[in-house]
Image 1: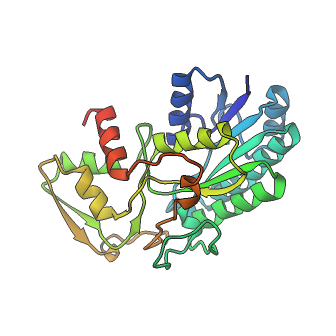
Image 2: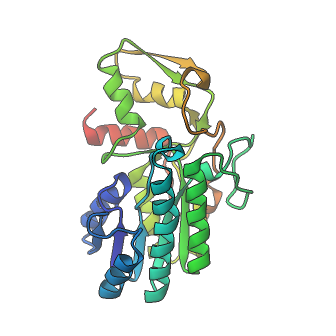
Length: 281
């Protein structure tokens, strides 16, 4: 049986992945920062040497985008660049395939068309810069890798936009949501399934982009989330909600490379409906 190691085991994606593998009866070893600090190279090496995994799903990440601009800047770089380099180097040494999760924030959001996998990157915030540095560390340390860029992630296990909208709708008659930032929502279940699909089908190594089909603005996403709730959702420009970190205005990534693998990608609307059923909303 293929030995699997998961980092970021208790995060939004790591938990989804563990549950998916549990459903399939697939064994794995999974660690959060308490049991394997990825920024500690010796700790990473010791765990990899002891377990000798064949596949590593690297879900650990620092994702506090605004904090990464100042108070969380150092930890952002330690986790997303240094930690990723440690994991990639250890994976190479034990001969493991590595799956690394990256972000649409590696792009600047000024493109009017979909971003292709090979388009020039130009991150404008510290989080995007550190995640891109993580991509480069993966490429530098190993050849047997899958980099998967994703965006607008929502799922059962963690804080996300869907939960925020549902919570606010309980206490407000009207919500305002920005309508000038466009992207693709991603259900963690779809992402976890794609991660395992690439490995199980031995797809060519390299960089992929995976979200659910179709695109929208945050306002359109919120409208769909709350369509059965008794609340008004109104569009506003980004200037209404100033944020520390730059947000790409148009970060719609092409899914063509992922689609060519034969993996079936459902629309974000269908993914959201399934998710809301899962959480009982």
